[in-house]
Length: 559
Image (cartoon, rainbow, N blue to C red; front, top):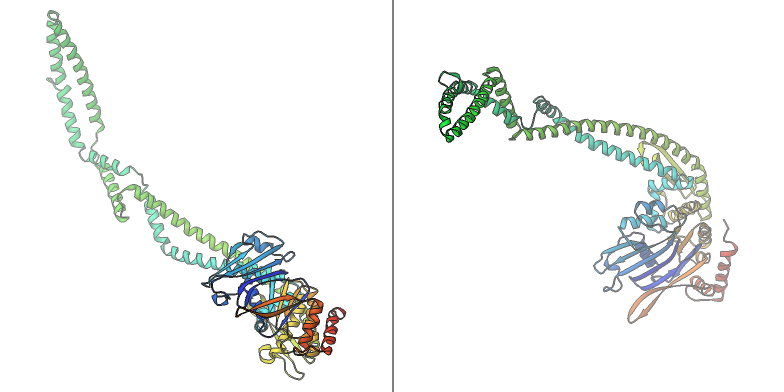
């Protein structure tokens, strides 16, 4: 419910603040005083677009602020999803600067305009001549039926699943596109992976192979030279060890004559032992060298194979090939994972489609159950509003496939005159008839307590006399269920209001501004009398005004 509206520097409004109450409030004023300007200002905090042209003072920014009580209208989830702190009241604010740039706030938290509009749509329903056009919209017509049938929770749950299905289908299309591209490379990637897997790659193998091949290539030469070395050291009659042994024997024979010779003997013995060990090591090494052409051929082929793989993948090290192999494994696994995703999404889509069909059929049954009652009540209300011969029907056909609204496509058919074929609203109803039809519909919806506030602008267009009184009674009755605010030119409607606001112009320093005030009962009588007598207040007009004021209490519940 709108509690307070504050407006600064907007078109003809310098600065004003209005306090609102529940029930039915009316706003009156002379033509051009700025009543519709209030609607424009309210529209700013409900998410309508604006530019710097709305600024009264071009050097200052425009600020519109609305204070709402929102308890009991199930808005907690909206706040949670958008990471806003929820309270039982909320302040919406909109600022337009000199350059036309707009800023939006919810409880002083900056938000984008779409979120402001989303919340605004849930707080205030604005009914204007422009909004009458929505009567011809099939989506609006279906929403009306759902509101009347009280199945919004069912429809909301269905729509959530419907859009979830659409998201699953989008994901499936994306995954299939990726899978199709990956599948084109899958066989080749698998071939490359198999080839590298068979190669049994080891990081240090290349250098080991080169070393082994070098050894095997010169094995004969190495073995021959080692053998010759052994022969020289210990193999022949005049080998190094034999000669060294003779030298030791010769010096040992004379060592007793000189101490220094004993040192030489010791050194020769030490060298003899080292050379003998060296000879043994050379012998062992010679025995370990094999001339093995088959092994050499095998290793050469292995090295050639690795070199071909390096060249094929345009890298220079076995480590690079191992990395390529790991990447190929991931690609092959990813293709498999994509296939798993496709199957899972397909199962989800199939399950959700089956659920949606069941939900849509249940919703359709509930809609059809209220058609006749809805048609009857609309016809009765139109009769009260001066269209006694009105005919109103709901045409419903099955949609070719599931839509966001289910399986029903509805169309409102109407005829204002007896004997005329009922046809689509766009072909049969005048502006005044559409206005009264919309009022009838919103009156019925208001009984469901779905919105905190409804704002009527020029609802009295095309009506007068007794019908105007009926319109006032309907608005009064709506006000018992929700907050209703109406801009009106008709005294019959103004008299029904629980509260009355008067919009007027003032001139100061060669500038015209719009102001508003809440009227007392005495002031209301004067204002309604002026409306009755074209600004000339007569005793008769005052008497009638008092009667209309009494009607708002005595006959506020009339049908």
